Length: 91
Image (cartoon, rainbow, N blue to C red; front, side, top):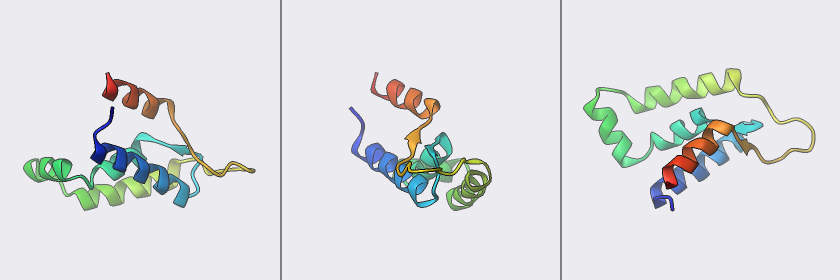
């Protein structure tokens, strides 16, 4: 079972992919959403990482590389990598 914060971040990553018109929810979408969680914000601060700058760079990367929805597909699907992360997180 997923932590409630992680589940919220997962839903946000789906929403982000939908909003951007992407065919898939990738690890980059997921990381972008996870960077809003308090534990990751603390980790970023401890490592001198700017989470907002990282999110901006992720958005740029996603926009350039993620395939867009075609045809009647209205909901993005998880990539195999996201499926693996989710499977391993519940084990």
